[in-house]
Image (cartoon, rainbow, N blue to C red; front, side):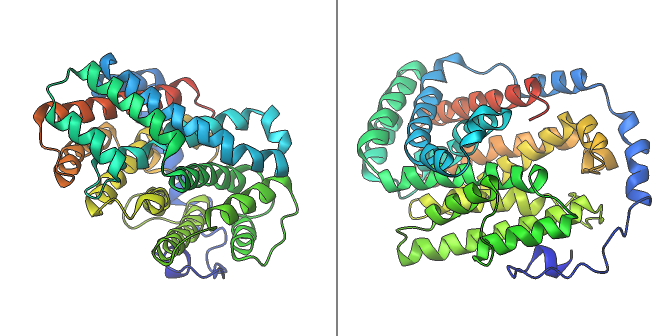
Length: 375
């Protein structure tokens, strides 16, 4: 691990010794050596579907309730920024990726954590307490959750909803901008994003303008505790940018994680900051495991695309096979049981409901990844 890239929140990049260090060397050879042993993509997708299993359709109303809430606040808080700073994005393929990634993937995570949080806000505690105590069927629990999410999304905790959707959208946008919207060497692209985030660069493209607007909006109206967690999360964003440069340069990761850890954990730290007053470390640990599982599954599915882009992932190196996918998945299932217990939700029926809801939402995410490989 290189401290100037992965540990420091400072903007400066000290990369002179890394430029093209591994191009043409052992990491590049891994592209041809290890990826040839992988099963075809269709078979890898089949393995994933078999691992997850068939989701319980009775929990679908809860997922619909969460996604209706996230899309409502996406329209309210994110779309005005898109319209003001990057209106052309609405006509491109990226816009659907933004909406799905922000609303259906990232924003769902803090709401799942809220449902199990040890310090749940009063309205959520009322609903989850009823679900934990009453002998309701799975479908009835899901309907209760759907109604509660609709009500809460419209009348309560508005600043929390706003920040969740801003953070979720920021994650999708900055990742896209780093990969697709900046010219130059990886170090140069990273330096521009660092300057944008610390305020020393005036946005000169619509993509950078939207990135800056989202970051600015996320920082508004924070109390001292929230600001401390926000600044910590933004430091993790800088770590992620540095780690992405290492990955682009094929600098070996001594942990065998392809420099993915900063992104895996930084994403979660960002998503948790709007709800940190309610959640505990159990939520953070569980969400880390979910984020790692999604990353491993993504690399497992997209090996051919990564090979084409000459990004040597742990899958292409042979460090992550299907056993890694299985292990990461099992960890998320164990973790959600512990998460429920941390929030005092101990009814076996209710814990099973939470687990089923999680499986269904992850299944939806994986199906989107399988069906839309270029996203």
